[in-house]
Amino acid sequence: MAFESLTERLNRAMKTITGQGKLTESNMDEMLREVRMSLLEADVNYQVVKDFVANVKEKALGQKVLDALNPGQMVVKIVKEELQQLLGNEDAQIHFNDNGITNIMMAGLQGTGKTTAAAKIARYLKNKKNKKALLVACDVIRPAAIEQLQTLGESIQVPVFTLGAETSALDTAKAADQYAKENGFDTVIYDTAGRLHIDEELMNELSMMKDFLHPQEILLTVDAMTGQDIVTVAREFNEQLQITALIVTKLDGDARGGGLLSVRSITNVPVLFVSNGEKVDDLEEFHPDRMAERILGMGDILSLIEKAQENMDVELAASSMERMQSGQFDMNDLLSQFEQMNRLGSFKGILKMIPGMNKMAGMVDDDQMNAQIKRMRAIINSMTPKERARPDILKASRKNRIAKGAGVKVADVNKLLTSFDQMKMMSQMMSGGMPAMNPFGGGFGKPGGFGGPGGFGMSKHSGSKKKRKAPVKKKKRR
Image (cartoon, rainbow, N blue to C red; front, side, top):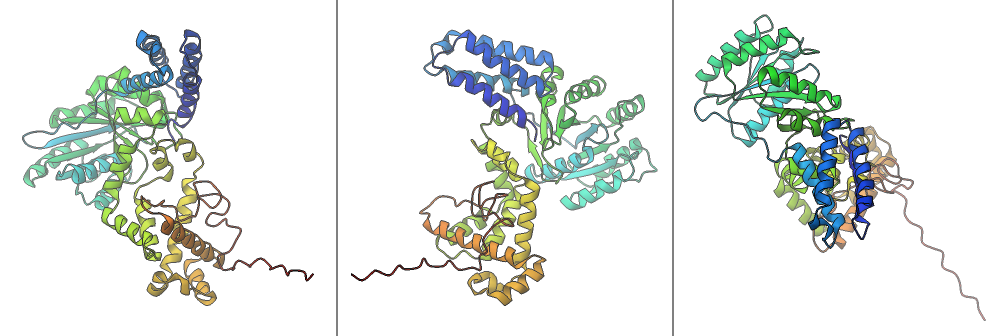
């Protein structure tokens, strides 16, 4: 994940100062040395790092900080504010046309996820901004680009306009503009062609489209995994097209993230969205203050709440919680919880948004957890309605049938039943509050938890075995 190493090192650097009773230039220099190395290793531009460290030092050694009761906390606050300054002090917004159609042009190099980003933005505009959006396939260069956009458009129920690969991008754009006006679309997103590198042919094509469309937004997609190349690409596109904002993709990959910290201060082009996966709903509005908190390991509760409100059925979750606490919780409820959890996306990403859970996120293997949940859903789906409602009736013959239907071992069925019983027992002991949505019976990465010994698929004990009572010792006769 992006910033993982940076977060760890910055936290270590902050500890050197927060543990000090008094702030001095000596311990400040020690902390700033570690901050400087952290940022450089994260591939942040050298001049950006130099200015950042100088600004932090100047503010931290000010009289207000020196006289503070807890100078360490003041320094952390200053570092957060400076990170936010790098990322941009204000949230970027799409500028919608007050009269007529809002045209959005997508630009970027090949492999940056531009076509997928176009579909993600269309979904965002449709669901969150209540816009009647149209996608236009102007990438007639890359094989299967049109088919890819059509597939994505179908999945989000947004129409896609195309004249095929034989028609030029400009002619397609002209025809799409007329089609949008005739059919009452208020927002049109043009997916343009990319290249492996910036060349004259690419820029001429984009310039001609820009001159015809007069777009309100020209959004450049950049790959978070390319490091400082983000800055180079953004600068060159901006010089020739006047880019309005950036879409940073693949932020969930093994990226150092330095380009994201450098690009705003060098190019003055704001980040509008960040993409954390390949699914059409893996798109987040970019909030500089929240990202600064994430980088410092402070979590991002506001984004987590927004994500839950958008993707989860609140009424269903509340009903499930009531049933759990009243002892009526059954396998149908558990299956519902799995589906709710799946909608929230990456488990690791969720943990990173919770304050204090950053280290624990490093212990989570998303692929392993998704495989475990998929297996358990298969087991529950292999049960009859009666068995889901009353799992206590499951005996050997029923378990054998369920295991065969789900393509798992009987031991896996037993492990699910054991975890289910533990979950019910824990929920009944709770007097209130949100129950821990962990059907694996433990903490993340801990024994009995996700990916830990005793978790699903790794338990040493089968749920079918009854606990033996300790032998009663006979009293000796006197």
